[in-house]
Structure formats: C-alpha cells, structure tokens
Image (cartoon, rainbow, N blue to C red; front, side, top):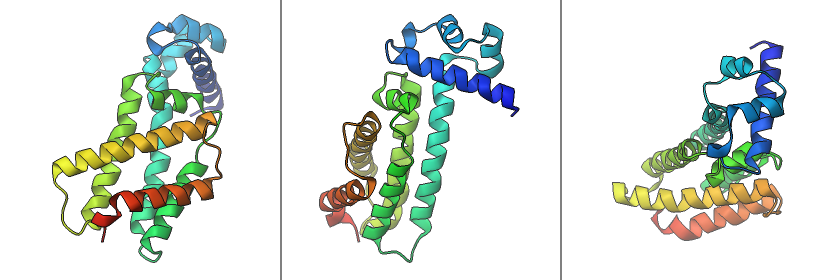
Length: 191
C-alpha cells in the first residue's frame, strides 16, 4: 500500500475514533468522518465501503496479532502450562495501547456488533482449540459454549479495562493474577 493511501486510511481511522467518543456508529455519517479527517468523500470510498469496514479492519489486525501469540502458546511444549499461560496473557496485554479508541469501542459494542462478534468468535475458537488438548475428558459443545462465553466475556472486560486505564496493574502482575483465576476456575478440569 502506498504511503499516501495509508495516511488517508490513518486519518479516517482517527476521525472515526474521535467521533465514536461522542456518538454511536449509527449516528455518524460518512460526511462527518471525511470532514473530521480532512479528506474527500471519494477518498473515503476508495479506501472503505462503510464506517464498519474501518473498525473491522482495525480489529482484524489486532486479532491477527492475538492469533500469532496464541499459536506460539499452543506450540510451546517446553514451558510448563501455568508459565506458558502467564506468558501468553502478558504478551497479549503488552499488545494493548491505552489510546486505542477503536479497539476499546469495538470491545464495548459501541462501534457496532460485527467487530465485537469477531472478537467473541476468536475467544470461542481459542478455547475450543485449547480444550481439545487440555481437558482430561472431552468437553461437550454446551461446556465449550458456557466456559468460552464466561472466559471470553472476562477477557473482553479485562482488555477494555486495561485500554481505558481502569485496570492499572503491570502486565506481568495482571497476567499472574489472571492465570491464577483461570486455573482456580477451570483447573479442576485441566490435566
């Protein structure tokens, strides 16, 4: 992608993030975004088809980074499980930026349902893949849905808290606390 196009996309992302602080996605017009970004309507449409596309693209980049971290977590057989989980959570927390308004609003649902649903789907997929290798007895589909919903919601809440600055623990400390909660909550079913 050329530099000029990437700058236009960045302006559009930043403009939408600013507008989302004050309004819901449904209330924001393309004209408001282009005015705030200082670009033309044709520039918007040469980069995106809709407002939601900006958010989905942003969330998809973040989800791709999470997938890479999860793959490393799943493939590492040298590190003991609790330490591996702590490292995975800490790396995940370190990918977060307190000024990532689009991600924060996507996780809260204020940026539309599609982006939030993609995060929920990835959380469910992570749990399903981990459960297939970790449980003493295979979980039922109902078990997977219940547990992944519970932990997925907690994950989204914690990530939102970190991004918004409401959760202020250092990533290493928070990762240890979260791993302990996970093991105390579902540890009886692991290994």
